[in-house]
Length: 137
Image 1 (cartoon, helix red, strand yellow):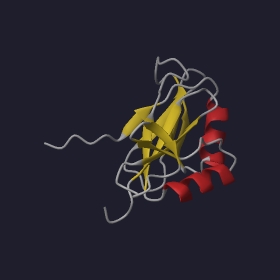
Image 2 (tube, helix red, strand yellow):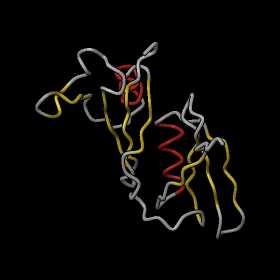
Image 3 (cartoon, rainbow, N blue to C red):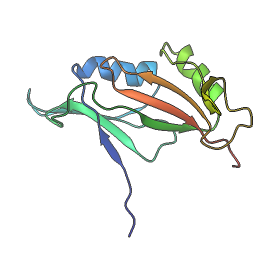
């Protein structure tokens, strides 16, 4: 039996602001933007290369805006991902890795699988973690 994660609901306060952030700033394609009156709207975006999408809108979740924390986006090159997002205007924290005494700046010196991280937040405070899994590892 397969259990495939395909959609995550993200609570936001302003749907249009969230759509602008994820589509324009992050560069995530919009798959759906559907309304049914004033009580329902769903916007679905999918990060490039992802099998899982996320949705935000009106009438789709009772979650508190900004309450989704630490959702991971796996990338093959943390430095390229960091550069792409910051180049698009996203405020991304510095790249870091876990050393013997805690967090240290910069990518993992050995570029090990799951070893390098950077994080950012959307306008509501939902947070994302970029995690590097280099190709061929």
